[in-house]
Length: 573
Image (tube, rainbow, N blue to C red; front, top):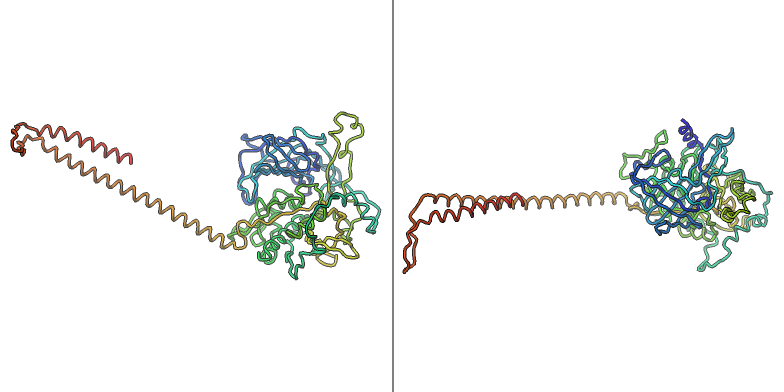
């Protein structure tokens, strides 16, 4: 009963562990089931209630700073935190997607209490790298040699946020004095601006202004945003990610693909079917990218949801159309690898709009171009080393150093520019609020280079993978069917030829055996003594001896031997 209540609570609110990158550092031991799960209706049965079979394999991997991983066997790889609730590890040919363990309970009328076990795995998946892996393996594990000893932390999440934006677990941010002057804003974010002081980038400078909404009079933004599943659903992370995916397909295909113009990706497909997020309770665009690589995303014409929110695709229309995206992840390949604005600009210019998470506070709702609120995490006693520990021998290994970005909403960055009023700005599309936008149009300006609303802290990218050929899906599946028919015809012809040769050989051997058998019967008629008068050459003496018995005795064994050989050949072709 308690477990059932816990999962009902989990569905109602976006509850997850709150772990920072340094809490994952150290030696991990993974226990991986050898029994694989096959994909069934876009679902794989790995969750906290699924127990691993007795057939398991163990893998030890060390997670290090800056997204570096190394196995005890010498393989190297990359890893990244997934927000604050898990991490993804790519090593050798494998991908490990891990959700950190936590427990939640009702604390009071306004908050939940969440205890995070950052050294334990709630549940996870192992797959093979690449588009549409065929099998999944459930896994669990633990951090057996942590670099720091901060494995259990507690935080509180506000209750009854279903009607608000999808908010990650975060503490109440501090307020700083309101200031609209641009110089004051720069002073507050100087450390962010100086994160990349070495400017060694060569080549042509990017355009001073750019917008994928108007490239020579053509728009590379989707004609309509993904349909919102309904009121009270915290789905901005899905809507923004799908809008970016459609825009990137339009850029990669130069608007020759129908996606974003006549067809659109289904937000309900991701919300109903993806295990990586929590559906309408919230999630991250990173998780949408993971789902698009493993399962693909159906277009709206091929996904008809049921009233219960179950994952039921439209099985009546074939072939179904799915879009796959690969190389999803944080720009810079690692959560916490703070992105310089030049890197974001070049990514947008070359590949299309990017997904950005923001902290949407009252200033965001009021269409302010820059927030006056300090939206960083508040450091608590759980997040810092106590003063009495500094004198211990292990203090140097226990000091905290981590990256944390407080965000609660997801948008697209589709371009950039500068003007006298705003200065440097990003052009931002907010699909989840486009239907009630009061900021003067579908696009709005957000100050650039100052990390306003944390917009430059969590930038996620993904790249279209045409699999196998979505420009001509009917021709592709027709080719597959024709190839299958031709292959079956060739196999049938080969089988027929083998059968004909075998039957012909059998008939020939039977005929030969019958002839030899008749020959033996005719010789056996010589049992009666007869006078044989052989013709002798002149000059030789006639020998009057009865040779019939000699001939019979010499021929009959030979016939029996030949007959046995024929039978042996028939029985052993």
